[in-house]
Image 1 (cartoon, rainbow, N blue to C red):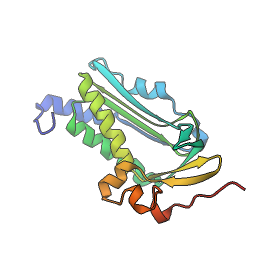
Image 2: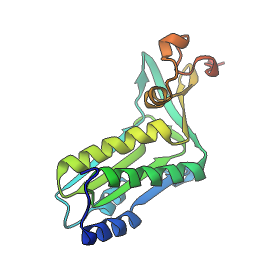
Image 3: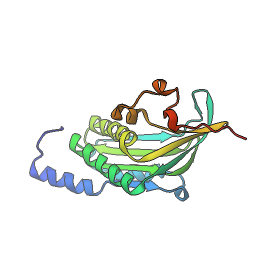
Length: 188
């Protein structure tokens, strides 16, 4: 649909729907993401599809046991960037409603840290919009992740960010995800 002109009535509906998009950045005190709330937010009688993406904390990475993830953000900028990403998704895909939520603070193994939901008349638009939104979050939103292991911790850079900025690949910068910016601290 990208590049196609919408009839005036459809453009007005699309603009109104964009005003109903949900963007949340939740602090640690907020607890777990309310997945059902975000799915219900995008539910629309004219939608034939709802697609979702739930990013969770895995319990192992490259042979190490992951205890938790810790997220920090430049919240005002992150919120603006998330809203812009949803506008970009609307421009590229024929969508009804969108919701995105990201937790900050500690997220234990097995819990969700980020959630994206999109509704559309057709499944392809909803599914592609979800992929677009999560890829853009990882590439451009100022939210930083520290992976905490039972034997240390590492600040992580997302592959999407490295690809976008043309930064050196991990193998080319000493085997860590962030080169000289990473300090792994062993447990004492």
